[in-house]
Amino acid sequence: MHDLYAATILVVDDVPANTELLFEMLESAGFTNIHTSNDPYEGLALYERLKPDLVLLDYRMPGLDGVGFIRAAREMTSDAEPPILIVTAQNDEDSRRKALEAGARDYVTKPFAFWELLARTRTVLQLQLLYQGQRQQSEILDQQVRERTRELEETRHEIIRRLCTVGEFRDEDTGHHVVRIGRLSAELARLAGEPDEFVDMMLASAPLHDIGKIGVPDRVLLKPGRLDPEEMAIMRTHAQIGARILAGSGLSMLELAAEIALTHHERWDGDGYPAKLAGQAIPLSGRLVAVVDVFDALLSPRPYKQPWSIETTLAHLEASAGTHLDPHLTQLFLDNADTMIAIRAELADKAGDETGLT
Ligand code: C2E
Ligand code: SIN
Ligand code: SIN
Ligand code: FE
Image 1: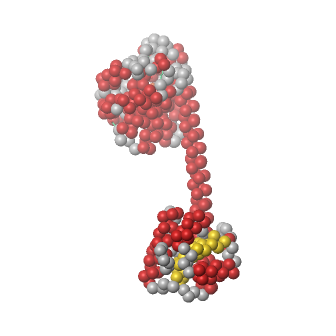
Image 2: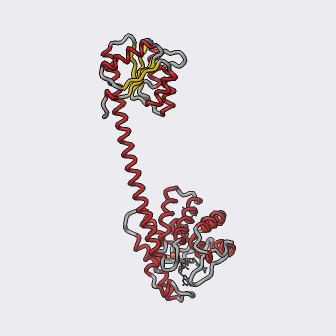
Image 3: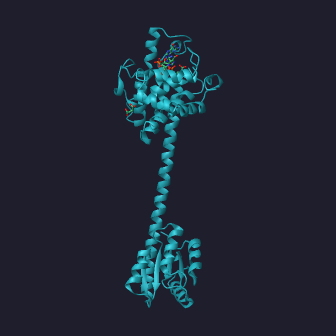
């Protein structure tokens, strides 16, 4: 705590004899930083500029009375209780009540004994300095927590970003595909009315959906033509491989990523893989990513196919609603196709990837 006697004290009273008396009393008691004003408006300006630790305030002043001063001071500093000690000849209950209700900390009536004024001054000041110290302390703590949280978030995002590139670097240059899957599925989740927390988790988790492709040999992953049934079976293991890589940490975001990796190739009609789940038995996360993954894959070039046009892609999604894809989510996606196309364009890969967008 700072030195009590170095505290900034402001005395406001329209009668010069009163400010002089209070100044002398405080000075003789050892206070070293005392300012006075005989005009309430000038006093307010000083209040704003000096941010005093204590104001000794007259109640009855021409122009602006004590209650008006307190209200103005509160607005000025957004301090709910400015450190104000009323010093006044008004000793009726009504005046005392009004002053305290307006936010004065305490009340001394004239004539007062020197010792009484000093005792109350010290009490209000001590409380104020304690309060300031606490506020500073909690601001420092808040700041530290914010910094740590930001650092953790950054670390988390960076790790996920790097993990994503591990899964993708063999069949894609930029890694934009996985970022798009995050953005698109988060947007679809938002449109579906899911809470912000889930939307944010989708944004971070969905990019990892294909990380299991790391376990698929190049001769399959990069094959320039259609896959034969044996190759397709190998390709399909990427769902379980991804889930095995991501599951078991107990961290909600990675658990969600594992769920997505495992279920993003399930089909609404139950004819997908790996578990042949159907309908609502497929987790929402997997159903969301299935819609946006097909959308994005069809618009993208693959070693085995040219990119499709927007029109053909949207027509295919419409035809897949209720067979391959969740019909409700697919309809929601199609109703907001412009938004989705814009998100995709924003994160486009390269000129050759733009076919269908122009
Ligand atoms: P991907 O290329 O990212 O495709 C994701 C999903 O989008 C596919 O899941 C499929 O549902 C849909 N999709 C992509 N391209 C087409 C298409 O030309 N026609 C239709 N009707 N749907 C399409 P799917 O089929 O389970 O494939 C999973 C992954 O396996 C694909 O991811 C891709 O990496 C690979 N893959 C699938 N088929 C072939 C293929 O014939 N040749 C090669 N080289 N890879 C393939
Ligand atoms: C993917 O990113 O989902 C697959 C990319 C590819 O097969 O070319
Ligand atoms: C849900 O399962 O939470 C609703 C989303 C859907 O199936 O369309
Ligand atoms: Fe996949």
